[in-house]
Image (tube, rainbow, N blue to C red; front, side):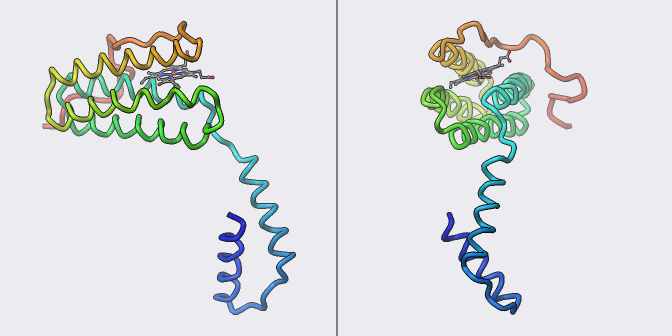
Length: 162
Ligand code: HEC
């Protein structure tokens, strides 16, 4: 990281045709940037779960309305959040269990690609069970997820656009 940043800095300076700054000055600047990066805002595990809860619910209504484009979009939101957890919370103990959700997500993705509502409903149930399996694995069995009864938002249309 340090070497790459140093390289970019030097290249930037050369490109600007400015006199090269001493390495010590550049290193000091990199230290300060690294420090800023370290202390910058990162969403917590719980923040990601709130996001996942929203898109898990939207995914259901997209699938039930056979709005496969929206379902595909919601799936990618879920996958992105899982990727981010793996990256940002790599050292959290709970992250070791996150892999269990990948296969169920792929099954839903397959159903969405095939525009198969029956397969969607079945794979969505398995996905939801897996949310709970992980909550049990991390001793949070009191966080119980289910198939939603009503859309999470009233200001969004879940049926496909005519
Ligand atoms: C690593 C395995 C894991 C998986 C898989 C997982 N969760 Fe979680 N979930 C957690 C952990 C850990 C927390 C507690 C986060 C914290 O510390 O704030 C949590 C918290 C939550 C919360 C917060 C509860 C609240 O009331 O604020 C919700 C909602 C939630 N998860 C939904 C889901 C949904 C929906 C899925 C499936 C699509 C899912 N989770 C899959 C581990 C997981």
